[in-house]
Length: 168
Image 1 (cartoon, rainbow, N blue to C red):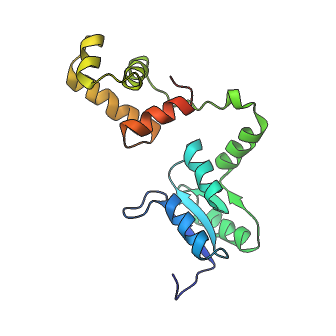
Image 2 (cartoon, helix red, strand yellow):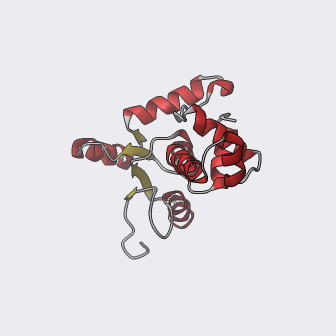
């Protein structure tokens, strides 16, 4: 990047070595004049707002058409900001709503919510299985689904996100 010095970077959030958020921070720290548009499949509030706070000038979904991507690049190159319509609506709602109303619906089942609460209470998978009268394997499956729905990769992330989102 030091040799080429692009004007605009299309940045994915899920990359193998450095995640997109960290990539935004690094690019902005070293090359503040470079504009960054996030192009990703993730539209959850946490990723959207973390990317924007890190310095992204745009946030478009991978489902965007070539025309929309081109328009986004053009808008950002002219000093504007660009977002997919659903992302723009999230931003509008974020600033228009009472903070108490900012609770994303991750569509956890009642059983997944129960398992998540027990994890937050510090119970082991085996203890949760015993307490809920289900197998260890079933608890493990619920936890995998919770991670997928919350877009997290660890127990700590799941519990932290659950607290922030007032799920537990």
